Length: 145
Figure 1: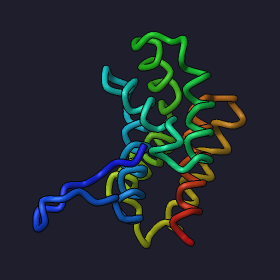
Figure 2: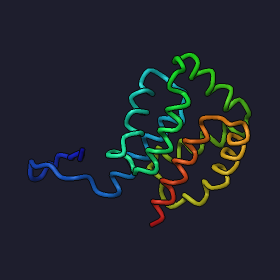
Figure 3: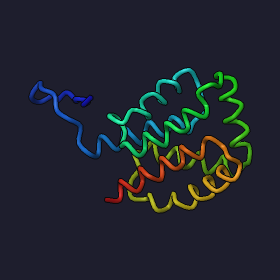
């Protein structure tokens, strides 16, 4: 599936540019790093679709979806609260989500320490959110090309 964007000057549709595509990918991952709500299921469906996300990113998000798929909304909210209960992890998550909402950018290298801290902690705890962080890392790597 190819998403088309209306072009106001010609009244035709065009394929999104690479920048627009990446910004949408970043935005979707940012939503998944926020506290779960009713819309998070829709964001998860978007993020696991390899037609809408780079296939490697979608694959890592699919691993996250597989791990949390059987949880109710309340259980997902509890997992989120427990995962980011530490002040340092909560701050790293907040900064990373804000960076992603801005669509990435030149400060991608500045996010690596936060990604490493979060990733190491969550991998050690075998937490499903680790898969989202790997997806972010893959997407950041694709931005550098």
